[in-house]
Image 1 (cartoon, rainbow, N blue to C red):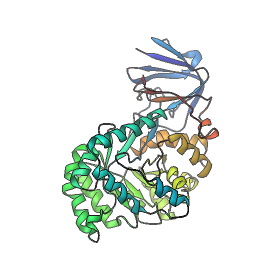
Image 2: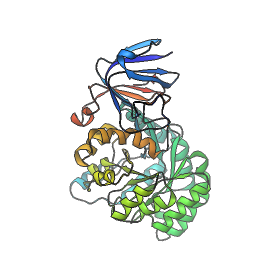
Image 3: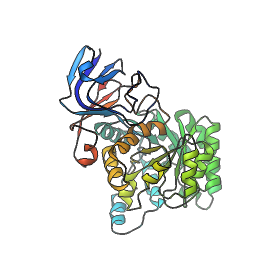
Image 4: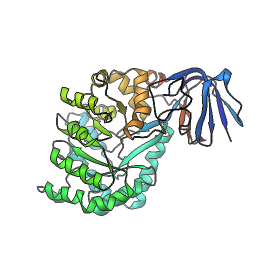
Length: 394
């Protein structure tokens, strides 16, 4: 059954207006007084409402805006426990460090599969209700062979974008012997996780893993058939971005502390996306990344939630869009593009992040006349409807 949604005040397509169909997200594009036809789970037509073809069913958007579904390319949803007291202490002046991850590791190891699955389902449901139709999910809170293997398997029940992050931090039982843990992460642990994962990631940061260790993890992951991505330059200047570009990583995530050489490397990479996570800076009172510097250099920028129990416990992409506009000085169009098409680029997906003809029919309707309201009315629940593969799901 085809569906015509008409009387759309603004249809954000991220697809060139002159294109009959597009194979991947393009620049930010929007059509005023628009309509869209969904058929067999795909976008079948877009254009002016006055020119819309007939369809089996009709839905009047009543002057609301329609956008591609958000593509959240960085999230940590397989965990147990909570760290509210840590957040409160941080707001009272305690600086953030990666050490808190170990408390989540202990809780996750102690949790049952059903407990982890229930929490993951709750968070995935939160994301969907807020317009996220595609999300990536990492392991990284198990840090044993068995716990990492079950983490990626559980993540795979909810998304195909599963990332093996065995190299999150060195667990307590390997304290003082990081080399032995890296061997495990590149060997037995990787072998157990690779069949259930698509991506390999590493936290390349002071207090986590250095450049050579990160290179080893990414190389081992690639040899096992996984594609690389990396946590880079979050807590301070470091080698993470350079390692990402050398490895041909799909994305370097965080990018808070960048040198001119880092920006130049991303701009010249030909494919490594700088994924910015403004919810982290909001939740840790750290400096925000300089999005304008990256955009001026021609770097492809994505926005993601980094939903996790420690440094950023939000599943809201609308909040991240508003923060990107207010705190990182992105335009509303740039921020929405980064949260949709940018995320698709970070996941190397051509079927989502845009509403060109042939794209997967993942879209959101706002209870507002334009995309700008996501930043104009921060904190207000504006998602009036969500479609995934052409079916209304919220």
